[in-house]
Length: 324
Picture 1 (cartoon, rainbow, N blue to C red):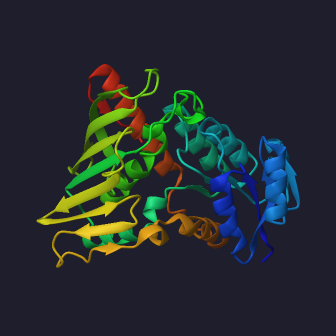
Picture 2 (picture 1 turned 180 degrees about the vertical axis):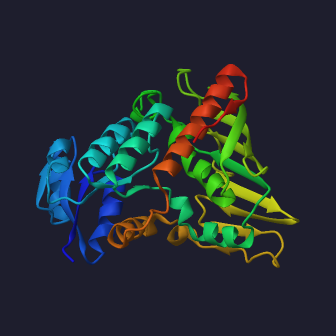
């Protein structure tokens, strides 16, 4: 089989991490590098022995030599770049959040369905080793408690805190564990009621604190607590319980804790178990073997829609219903 030619769109730290993994896989290569900063794109191209660099996204979309794209750009570009790639028949690996709005989620789903490409969202918690152990030990939880409290507060002038470009920490960071709630339950969230607001920023356009109660289609329930401004001591964790069994993953799912050793073995895997380096091999495998990605456009949509419905509930004081 000919090499799978991949364009990296966004030559920052995440683009570098994913491209490093590509370079280790036989039969795949970084073919082109794209960034708004031409010098960054040039450096990436030299680092990964690409064929060319550019600041023009459309150039790689129109290049028949390119089979797939890795998108690690600012959040507001994720939807338009995804749709362009789908229309150009390029397979897509997209960093989270997949989209900023509910409308963008539906547009991406439609574009992917029409194109037949493989579309994978970078929800690394699904690949994390602690997640694997917890899901095996307690496959059908009845209660899920999710805590996503980032230790830092992004400045109001940061692009990531901008309501259009970044969306803030709840949308950007807590989407990992919003997805993990579904992945551990394997049941659709159908309603949410949330309280919260903007507690840590001057601008109230971006909600930075959410405490939500979620009901799943199978009757299970969940708590989703997300925001910034924590001390970092609690950080990220997901706890599940069912039939007298309970367990917890910490961080993004890399470490796992069981109260009862008969349920499972507690393990600290550390950074090696984060799932980060398993994502790209899985993406390439689904292209080569023509199988469904482990985290699809529907999964990306679910996480964004759930969080947007949390925001809507905070603002209206009403229960919100989801249509994934």
